[in-house]
Length: 502
Length: 97
Image (tube, rainbow over all chains, first blue to last red; front, side, top):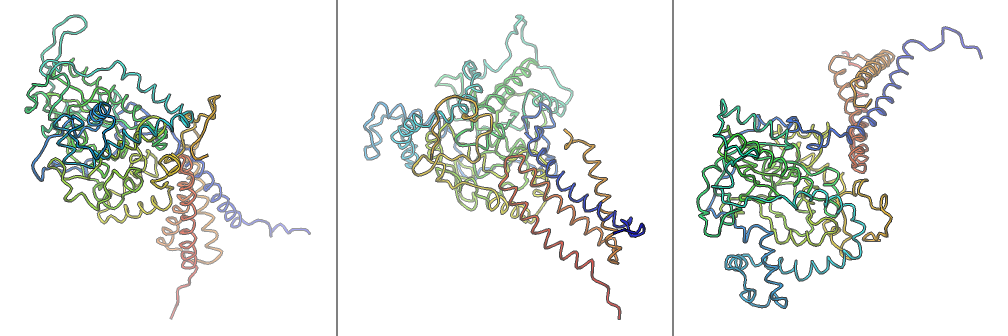
């Protein structure tokens, strides 16, 4: 049939057709663009550059005059022997090996523990039960599981081994602070210079933070060192009769730096993840800063994951404005959430202090509980708020580090869990989707945005049940998300692999 | 990468102008009276519609495909309901007398 010329596609119909085509093309293009954005290397906060731009959250609107932590009771400084879980379980292990037949029914005195630890276990008997379970049950079971399944996690362990390389030859201070922290002669044999003055404390602070980023720190903040948060004994390089009651005067300022663990690996916790990637990087950055400040003539000591700590890090990080304490007990930062491994550099270099921030974490943690619900060992408090939970004189969430460590020793792959880091809704990469939440939520005084986002998180994102993370038959050694492609054993290695649950 | 580049967003802007022109042609055909605030609501709806696809893609990109798909379905459902309401409202004639 002939179509008359004047009945052809009119200009208006052409526009309508073009508009419809435009909608389809835009929708398709945005899916592809979103996919690129989601996996963009620029979204890997802390793993994308050594530039101050990694600390991208504008903290100014959320700053307040500190302190963020005020004691509510009698303050007791933390003890290496009891509160520091690795030393405590190490001491227990030694005692248990000497008395392998000991059970919870026997008197604790039979273990011949140091008096501080014996008193601690009497005060917190549930910690004794967990530490006993770790060595009497969990570790022997783990040996069996490892023999069966370990090949499946071999590349994850190899990846971790590489990041552990520095720890073999790094060592912390070997002399007391009065000696080891002060600059000595340099490689050319020149005597140390007197402290070089900065024009202003503001500029000193600006310079130190700028260089901290250049040295590899993703986040950097500065605060006063709080003597209440120093360990009560056992500072590195100090003899047992050292006076630990007084903080060395040159520790007065604390530079706190943080580096996230790799984002794809962190989501594959608890079985495939490692802390050592960030431990290595944050230690390196801290030691570089220590070297630089010493070069300028100031006494300095770094407290890092690979060379150990003489103080507690999270409360200092909070006072330095890096974030807020969450239900998990660590500092939740706006840029990286809980995915942030930290180090502290104490010095007397005069600097301007940063202010703590309130961007809504405390209120969010009260209602979220995703970390506690996912925690395989139940170590994280399920309380509705930290009110009344007083530990060593400060009110904060209760973490049973004995239960936590027990699950560490149950996991496959590199030791540890970090599931609370992976499940935390704040631990997300830097792309438009999460940045939208980062920008809107802290500015919403009603809390409606965070409640809505929490519902999306809980209902639309898959969260395995806590029991699935356990060993078979109770669980299936689940991971929060699958391992990243570069840790897939089947893909790269020519070995027999038994996967749990198969 | 083309999909992260300025050129990509420039082309998206051109496409958006085309979509608006198509919508105007459609509105004229139907003799809708589009005031500025109706137009603003329409643009807002369209942005929400497109963001749903963008969010889906982003979540696929960060290996959260399951959540991405659920968010796509939820977003499309919200867009469908709000879109029908908006359409009927735009089509409504002002009553006289």
